[in-house]
Length: 109
Length: 118
Image (tube, rainbow over all chains, first blue to last red; front, side):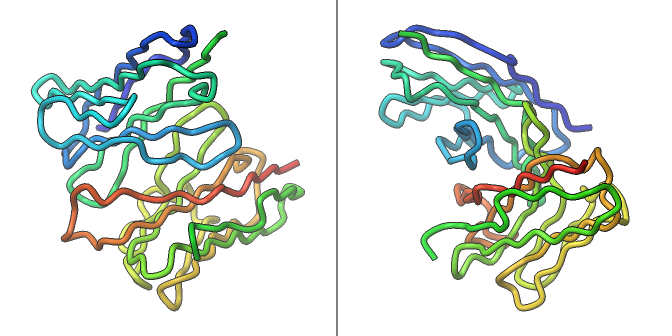
């Protein structure tokens, strides 16, 4: 079966660093994606990992360990505008993107 | 266009009514996906088109749900005899590459249609 787990909610302070974890068990693996979704808006692409290791893109970094079925999204120098839901999604060998439930991040002043 | 557009943005239907949701993908994008997103949940896959061909409809929850993309661009998701459990946001996404060109090519999502069935 397909199963992706993320924490439901997280809270952090402006300027801090936060790590959002994602574990997955899927029938196939062809990449892991992170999306950001503000309330009432469409998900927007943040990062993609297909090989083990860390991908850095500005304030955002994403890590993947395929052997552990584990990824995390790291957000540095948090800003108020980073308050959103963060979706972890695994692409299987077909075209399907299997999404996790999302982690709602609240950034406090 | 510049991005994926969907219409209407909001739809209220009485139980038993039929609804039609429209998606205009990014011009030239081969792949088109429909997702259903319940409140506080991640998107759940409904169906996938490559050009006009519906290659995967395994996520459609019942035979009341029907999707088409007759000319390989605009797509319509139709829900017949709507039920309260159909209330959700329906997201459309498009992707440039077809199946065999998998990789970093991500999906681009539209703003969604929020369907409320009373």
